[in-house]
Length: 476
Image (cartoon, rainbow, N blue to C red; front, side, top):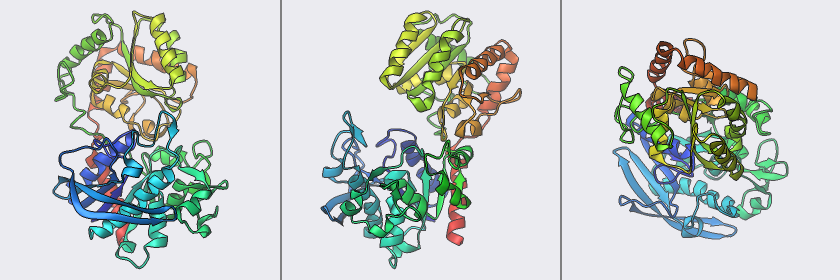
């Protein structure tokens, strides 16, 4: 199959979260299966690579606000994988992807309309007529709309569209003046079959309405977003389209996240020989200024310090948990109130708590390898990656039973991790106590670690599920 993959960020060139990881990994996995894949993304200011070369083609897109032009650049990543970057100094030649210190950019509707329309025109310019156009989140929500309404009768019109929802909380909502600003037909401004959403324009809603198939990043999250609690006011529409909604768990980069070869670790180890994990544990404690010789269990987090991640719940519970002999290390950045609370916790328990505010790739790997338990108390979690990293590194995850966490972590006495249901301090504290009890039984802990390390979270497994979905659309 020929696949056009459109995303607002693609690792390692641009990334703010899981979307960038998916856009970097899934197309490569599909290409490895033999499909011809082209990825389209903006060339932001920070996208620099010696392999970037001009294609000799440019875009010329006409909007009511003017004509926007820009060259199409290319990186040939593999024999049948090409990354196409849309260059436009006016839209993308600035610091930040979606916004800066002052908030989201006010012209984001124009910036991502350029990406959406530009991706389709780029395919035409290069003579690439895909079987599948795979778009991601609100930033590309106009692609299925434009394909259905503006490209009928062209060679592109035979393509089937798939929209992946990475996080339903982000929908691309703007004032209805955007209809005229972008030249969108006003007959699309309807609640039933269009872009209208509480008298505003909603890019994601448009994509959900017009895509041939919908996916999200775990089966449980696919169910959760069809309920009022998790549906962010789009649950009714998603229930109406449930027949084409599929949950496919994200994969992870098993080459980067491999304890047997990880260059960030002081010692390597695998499921058959976990001896190197003890050395990683000692180095982790040393790096955080804690005694490396303690026999106490080590709990860790690497997280955005945000409401979604349940950081408030964790920080409410940790003073009680630290009354027993445990250690806690945290790497993260985010909302100021959580940063302050985390620092206060370290001041209160300086012999038991270590923190690093910011992002450090090597330190993140060391937490995954050196901790005994990894905590993810999320309010909601579409997929989550750190619990899969933890399992791969023999670090038992403690997770709330929501979204992709419950799809990837198995509870119970013969499980791979520790799950808790209620988003409540008592439930999380009980889970931490269960972890301490597990730690006190080394043989049972070893079994948990080895079961987790045996699980396959590679992108190859996820890509094959996408492949089957794409094939079903093409043959319908």
